[in-house]
Amino acid sequence: MLAAVADGKTVSKGVFNDCLAFLLKDSPREIHPPLRMPNIKIFSGSSHPDLAQRVVDRLGIDLGKVVTKKFSNLETCVEIGESVRGEDVYIVQSGCGEINDNLMEMLIMINACKIASAARVTAVIPCFPYARQDKKDKSRAPISAKLVANMLSVAGADHIITMDLHASQIQGFFDIPVDNLYAEPAVLKWIRENIPEWRNAIIVSPDAGGAKRVTSIADRLNIEFALIHKERKKANEVASMVLVGDVKDRIAILVDDMADTCGTICHAAEKLMEAGATKTYAILTHGIFSGPAVSRINNACFEAVVVTNTIPQEQHMKDSSKIQLIDVSNILAEAIRRTHNGESVSFLFNSVPL
Image (tube, rainbow, N blue to C red; front, top):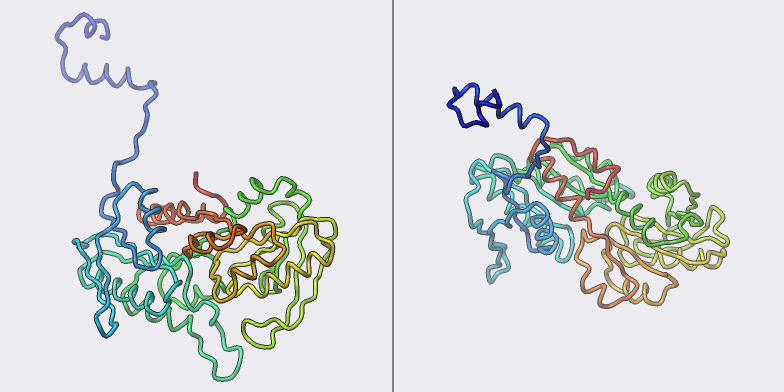
């Protein structure tokens, strides 16, 4: 049969197809990914356009056209510049900068897409706003994180993608699916690649609330952990600290989900050096760095303060040579791709996409 084809003889279409199938059966074939992902639109709010651009570059698509502006009375106006009818829409907006304006802008964008007949609207919120107000810790205190969850649902969000929630129970504030991604795999990768003596290190939590996060990292690196017990007089002010664990002659790596004014981690670094640590690093998912944070970091005894880019860090890195960056846009992009294609996202809980 193959000889007949090779000799140029006329053969039936069925015979020809059989020959073609036989020839291709064992031949290596390179599978090319599709040039574009159909029925997906990704829009960026004004809080972190650089992260949104990195996400779409990773996915090989273009950022959706949107214009955000303010009227003279400072009302927010959003104009979606292309059709979203029947599309899978993702809106990237982080809880940073002018938080209240950015939150309102995101709600308006979600609602604008929803009433324009988008098939599904997903809010990608790398740093969830108001996440620290997650419980009634004193009389008449608001649970603002629950209020934000209600606002997102009422605006029309069908799904939430976020990273390292301050308290994981915030997922329960929603009646829609929430994917809480973790920066931990990227943190482990950074430690292994950038701290040569990491096997002689100890992972330290600056407060008791982060003990679970720290033990998970310590277990995966097969090293020990310690924690610091702190008492606060009032918000953003630490009264006293007690170190639980032995850090003498070791590299101390402080790990926390966020740092705002950096009073806690700078006090913790002093405590660790007093206890005999040889070097101190800090690794944080959300580097808010408000008020005197950057000057405190410059004056503290850190080798490096490592943060992810869930919040823009360009200015902070200019102001302090100690601040280094872990890019998590690949994790967010892969979460978006998997969500869009209906695949499992749990792979990202333990691995960094290549």
